Length: 301
Image (cartoon, rainbow, N blue to C red; front, top):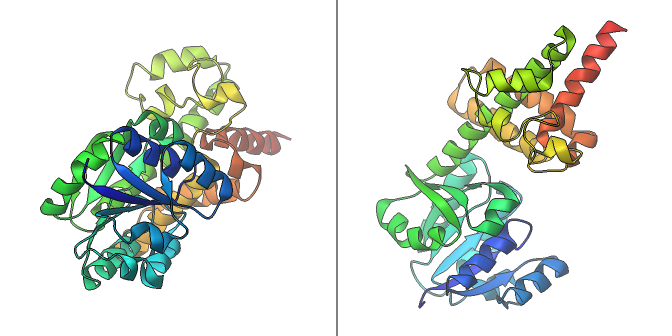
């Protein structure tokens, strides 16, 4: 394929995503600060640049997958946009960042003579490796048309959510639902335990009734009913408590930005923030059930 892609951020998500672009026939130049990630990218067939700026110089499209908004904006403003020599280079940020940060990144790209788009993902490392990610895209129609075949090489479902920042808006709203629903499912299982109800019985009822949700049927927080859930693997993530705390923090930032009164969302954010301050940071977010159990044991003591 004639499109040249620069991929900045070759970690657990970015590395497999870039590798799938290579498999789809794109020329991909990558960069990361971590030597192990660089070597994995080289093994996957990427050309490795000496710096992020070198990676983007002759790129038609630049994809970034970075830890936070400060990293995206810092890199854009710190020389990445200036290093891209082709006017109108399309910068696609697939990091999960605040909505206002996404809009700032877009504006920086436009001022520099380029194009900007936010395209956060859902599906985790498994989805990144299998090219089955869901992309939530914020950008104009023309840029979306350019990005679509590239995103299809890395994902299974691509949704154009509207203009700049609205991909991140969709992501934060979705993960707000997920965080709240996992707490609700976990509290229901703890209540069931204290009432003498077996996990299997509650699962069979709720998974086929109005309590059905992804947190129950795919990421069930108790061992047994869903064999592939992290609960059957010592709560190894999956989607970590640290990432859920981060995403709910972004939801809180969006509450403040829009003046939204969201009491349950704010409480869920506090619960996961406390969870991620300890061992929960490296556990699957469904391990929140163990915190709920412990709190109830303390109350009964």
